[in-house]
Image (cartoon, rainbow, N blue to C red; front, side, top):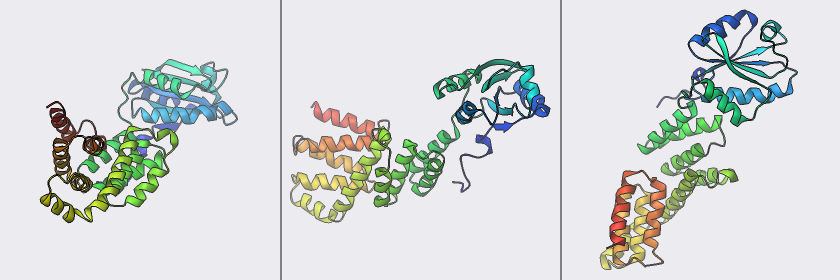
Length: 302
């Protein structure tokens, strides 16, 4: 995993200032290769300061499907005069050397996104943040929690409220055994993201890891209890929790399925409910989730 920044570099910032002298090269000529959005603005224009960051963010998220330039009409009035621009902010998109679309005034972000997608022809690829998220999730799945945590942290430096990165960092900390720091991070998550599926899964993973840490201290005793009495359901349940928390997912699932087979109603169907929590943590598309669901269904309807 490279140590240099993975997001926010030059490739993720296709926005530059242009002048009358560079307009032909940067806009007209360049538009034959990639659509170019021109933001006509001025320092004294309040709506320009409102629209500019939204437009830049949306263009960056298009990840190369469009380019953007900014032209200060106070310093470069000639182009604005030629295009008969009477009020700002004014935004025009150029393709194949000519303007093809545009709008005047500060639009809401949803309409700006529609405009950029329309200009880009719907060809926008994954954003740098999305690519970094995918890379970090893959590293976490492969057990490289240190690299995953580093990338999730980079994403949060750029987008501090990204719920997928917050959840991912918590999972990386859990995998590394730093349960206290994972708890602190999850406790700081904004209320509007509290119900996000990945945040909920991270909380479930943390709860389970904390339970497992306690259970593992007596894992030997739990196994001895089961040897002495295979119907010691509490011991089997705690052992399954400990196994899952230490990464032995299949062994943990086997113990819970065995418990469910022996007494499905024990402790208000605790075995089934714990399996559902495992599914939430592993994710609905995980092969082990899918196979275990089939095994559980077979037991439920047998």
